[in-house]
Amino acid sequence: MRATGVVLVLLFIASILSAQRQSDAPRQIGTVLLVDGTKTVPLKHSISASRGHTGFRAIKEYFVFGGPKANVRSTSTSPIFEFDADPNFNVESGVYLFRFDPHKDRREIRVAKGNGKDVRYSIPKDHLIATTLEEVGDGPTQTKHYRMKVSGSLRPGEYCLARSSDSCFDFGVD
Image 1 (cartoon, rainbow, N blue to C red):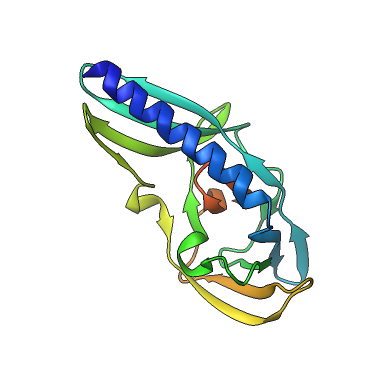
Image 2: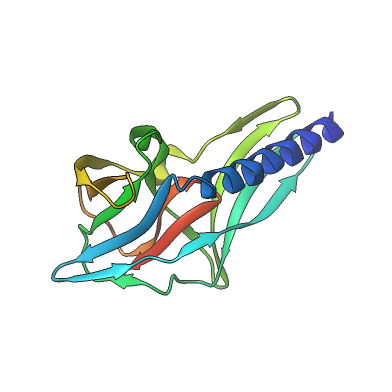
């Protein structure tokens, strides 16, 4: 059973890395801009490393981002994000905002939890941030331009606007 869980996690990671390469090919989502009051800052695209924990019948998988804090910092608790996306990409379900678990040398998010054959792949619900998304026009090279707003207020911490849990545009709120 334990070997089966490890194999499932490895297959999951391989599928994500494959999907990541595919998502970069036709440009599903382009540059992401953080609008913080009167200034606009481009967010840097980051890809995670992987870390797993396999105990007796228990499996947890994390995606880990280096450093305790993102380089881009915001003082706004209600930042706005703007980006262009391929019109065939399902932006409604394919782009989301989540909060990292911070550590002194890294930021991470749990992406899988389970035991044996029953492994669930998802971001913990208490880490997902409610947002609203609107299409605001056409972008360059036959893309659509979107604006995403946080539905409430963000607490100080480390966050990620993501198109998958291992590929994100990270930022922090001070």
